[in-house]
Amino acid sequence: MTATGNTDFRDAGLVFPEGFTFGSATASYQVEGAATEDGRGPSIWDTFSHTPGKVWNGDTGDVACDHYHRWEADLGLMAGLGLNAYRFSIAWPRIMPTGTGEVNQAGIDFYSRLVDGLLERGIRPVATLYHWDLPQSLEDAGGWPARATADAFTRYAEVVGQALGDRVHTWTTLNEPWCSAYLGYGQGGHAPGRHEPAAALAAVHHLNLAHGRAVQALRATSAGDPDYSVTLNFHVLRGIGDGAGEAMRRIDALANRAFTGPMLRGAYPSDLLEDTASVTDWGFVHDGDLAEIHQPIDVLGVNYYSTATLRLWDGVSPKQQNDGHKGADGGTAWPGSDGVVEFVEQPGPYTDMGWNIAPEGLEELLLSLREQFPAQPLMITENGAAFPDTVDPDGAVHDVERVDYLRRHLTAVHRALSQGVDLRGYFVWSLLDNFEWGYGYAKRFGIVRVDFDTLERTVKDSGLWYRELAHTRVVPELGPRERRTLDR
Figure (tube, rainbow, N blue to C red):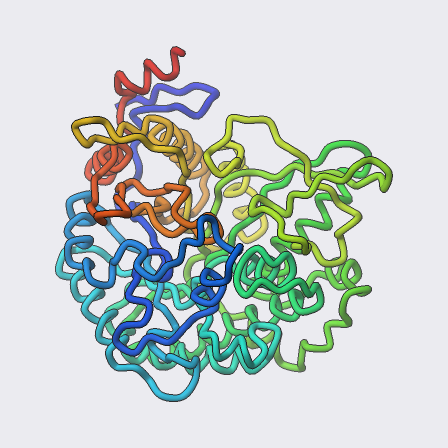
């Protein structure tokens, strides 16, 4: 079949190679619910969401999508969608309620049933050890700015590796440590909600250290032959005005190279250390840490949603406050560059999150990573969009905007593949509408709708579109609804 190409990334007929993975992703606190059942301890997101004013409408993840009780039906949905793989996260406080010490067998058993159920349906389990739900006891002892949290994470990785490492296809150590460190401890918009720039940088290092140690622990305990990975949310940057290059360099150091430097090169970038010298002396980096962090991985997880535009602040004009897509809560996600770099509004169109839709940024990112790390295979572990879905009287959800978003970004993926990028697969975010962190249940990312009153699931048009892609490996032709939307 011949591709019908154009410059707006709305291609059809593109054929993906044999073996290319089409999956979907979720995270434990966003979907599981059962927050106090079967021995699960509290996490920082339980505490944060129960704190008045922190989450839209006072929403919490207490019930979420009730995946903990409905996992078998949800696996049936995945099988019906033709997913090759399912990326889920393991709730640390469900395995070790206080983060250390006694192991909760009921938690192990839940994930063991989930993994077995995936394998029975021919779906590869891709397990993330940490998707932001730190046990509250560890936060009370200092959280990620404390070195002891990396020690505890190493033990947690050993426990989970021994329990599930004979069956998990891919281990991912961390999801988006940028969010955990900067939004959790600097900007304050994510749990635990602290506003401490030096603590945010200490958290960066201890998350990096936790990654490296966890890879070693998983290798030592996994009886099977899994792949090992980490997932980073890369910032694709645009600069404007005089000094644009300097603004981009600073944010690239904090957002991207603070993680790829130690993980993939074995060193922190010297410019990062210089830019942040007024915030911290990096004394929390001990001898031998960088060697522990710099572990070989089989695949690098790439999360992408939008681009960011910035410039050097002139120090005079009113400064816009946008800390990199996630909103602001009185702190900064950019230690050492707050008051130096300004994020500016980007042209639309936008998703319901207010993020610009820029599929060309994904192609650019994949090509850039290939250039920086030519021997490193890649996997898109999250890409998707929130839109204000409506339900027709017959119960159908015709989410044509999401279908268009997926088409455009998968066109970008295919273009990167055609240019030689070693890209192994694509995971759409998200399988289900779920608890969207500080936005509660106000934003819907799922290709399956969840009615949060009844918890009924409904496959949206985007899910049907993705099912066709997963079954055929061919990007579907534009349907009449898409064409009508584009013609408007």
